[in-house]
Length: 192
Image (cartoon, rainbow, N blue to C red; front, top):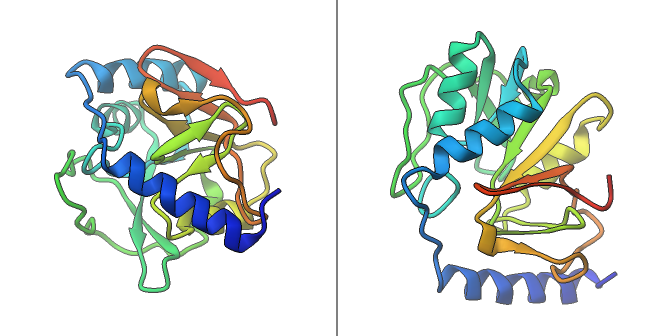
């Protein structure tokens, strides 16, 4: 396992490289991702899912499907300390070119503890569950507070951003995902 400084440096270099080569999502990607996730978690009572922006995996179809099925869908709000607060998704926020905070009543950082399924964004993900995010550590902080039993953590990724186990740098605080969903595959990670 890399030391914190080595891991941070390696992650920063990989983030820069990936950001220099953004992925393109075909128009049907959102529907394909939704079908795969629904096959894993068809009717959660509470789920959390980010609002995609930039070249992140599209989530509007998934959030809409869950809301229409009666789920409470929580969406994150980035706080100044890089932790995440949560609001209830009202179904109006779509995909955006740049990130903007969703509106709604703040439910507090512990609201996500009720989620049976947590959808996390990634720049890249390894088949071992290693996740390379945006670099703020927000989701590692959230996932580190929650018990894993009875909860499914899913990374939505472009097929080109899924790496073999052991490739992505991992630090001690990193929390792996359980499942990777791409438009073409469902991958149960090797750590779970």
